[in-house]
Length: 435
Image (cartoon, rainbow, N blue to C red; front, side):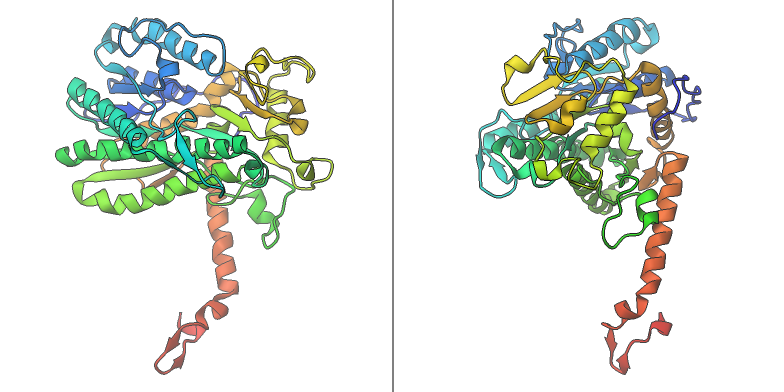
């Protein structure tokens, strides 16, 4: 839920844990990663902070402030560097309980040579690229084990959102690349890191893997055929969001992977938790890419509200200092087909003919309030002896899930006779009353 005011979040009490824990965070330079690291170090835990090379700079080796050029992600890299310089390195009790590691767990990041087919987003990589990425993940795990002797909790929190309808994202080679990048960040990246950490956890016969997904939902006023108003108003879990189909698909793929993996690793005393905060946590605190608009989906002709329109309007309201739509982009000269910015999505996004890439610039107080519930949930379930397999964050999200489950149950009862009619026993047709 988006905070309705700019008041600071209520201070959270860190749940008691008898022993300090070692965390490995896959996206430590994100707002969520920085906020969680602060809480962990204050509590006495150790943290291995993984971030992409562009975000880490020289921190992983010399612990010096990186030299960051202007461009996409520069603000995030500088914020991470400021956090390390002004907080982590200053606190004497923190100095020996953190490490920074360069890590980009994606199998493909747009610069790799890969072979494309004509189907929707299908590609395969050369073996060397895959081996290099897996080796990088294994190196991060090895550095964590060498420094702290173990990894208690792996938290996969890298995320980005690609906005666009299914047709828009299949319109060109550039948009197909966006699809691939979406799955690399939200699915293959976490999968690669989980595969790398499992041997160390199996050896210790202990560990906890937490993956961050989210509760996708439909927007008010949009009622898909075959669903009720209640479904859309109180949508939760696996309900698609118009204009975020590829984002939802990558998250659900990761959840299916983790649900299956949980059974495989349970005999080794390794726990699995899927953490699901509201959609805004991942979308509004990470990179957003938007595909060029197809006229058939223009707001003037298309009745369904899409993520492009609603998120663009929301971010405009959160930051009224957004430059006018005709203002030139400072980085637009770098690429004729895309633009990058650290400002909110412009209103002209509705008519954009190029790929727009931004990092939303939320006010600090609002960002802190937005993250507070998720930080508390992570601190509570991380390393728990019997953690939930799926943890819903926030009262509103819990209520939405309960309502969704109630709706599904009612629909099941409405058609139970049709469902039971296909089950034939030796003595004849199974009656619905027998269920």
